[in-house]
Amino acid sequence: MKFSLLLFLALATLSSAMPTPTTKDIKVFLCSDSTAAGYGPQTTGVQGFGYYLYPFFTSTFVNSAKGGRSTRSFINEGLWAQLLDQTSPGDYVVIEMGHNDPGTPGTGGDVGVDRAVLSGVGEETVLVRNSTGQDEVVRTFGSYLRQMVADSRVVGAVPVLSGMVPLMEWTDYDTTLQKTWEFTEYSRDVSKTENVLFLDHTAYSVARFQELGYTEAMKLFPNDNIHTNSLGAEINAESFVTSLLCSKGPDATDFKGTLNEEAARIGYDCLDAEYR
Ligand SMILES: *[C@@H]1O[C@H](CO)[C@@H](O)[C@H](O)[C@H]1NC(C)=O
Image (cartoon, rainbow, N blue to C red; front, top):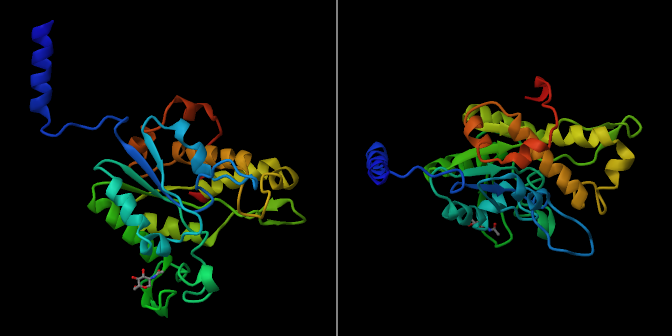
């Protein structure tokens, strides 16, 4: 018994110079905005979906989402560097951005001046004067996402791109929830060119809110058409996990391995390929 254990340990040491991290050692980071950020108990009743993701992972989930941030301001404020500092090789970095990126760079008053990026995934830039009075070269959404993908890979982490959760934009006399979102499509485009796993969180959330219908869905948005209450956040957390369970592509199998049996219990069907 003792001998075989020693032999096993010796063989295990020989077979790999570096210890392989177990699923439990692996961390899953979420880089996102107010739709995902965790809020404490408060009177407005708003909650982000990251708050409800912890129970679905065997791995350690880290919610790095911060309200009001775009790809550009998440990087400029040092939040991105902080996230990367906490990673170890083999960790996952999920990047779900897009709610604060639209707009005209350099405009938008106190809130907007430092966060808007150029639309699209190209290499074009614009020079703006930002709120600290400095000249700043602002790039496209795709360009910031490519930077985040490359930075993640430099530290040995696995980047994952995720489509943003939908705004409650209903048409056809409030019967149809908008399915396609520009910044989700840019993210999907970058996932293809950079060979990154894409989670169609957008489509899986749209499906859940569409199934509820306008009246019930709107009860989950107490303040505006973007921010959910706790119940809405739970739905967006479940749709995130469903989008991962249903995902296909680079790193999909390994990333699914970070989930636990609670995730399998959510039980929503995968969508047809229409949005993937
Ligand atoms: C303004 O631009 C400079 C130069 O690009 C940058 O270092 C700084 O972080 C920006 N300030 C803000 C508040 O984003």
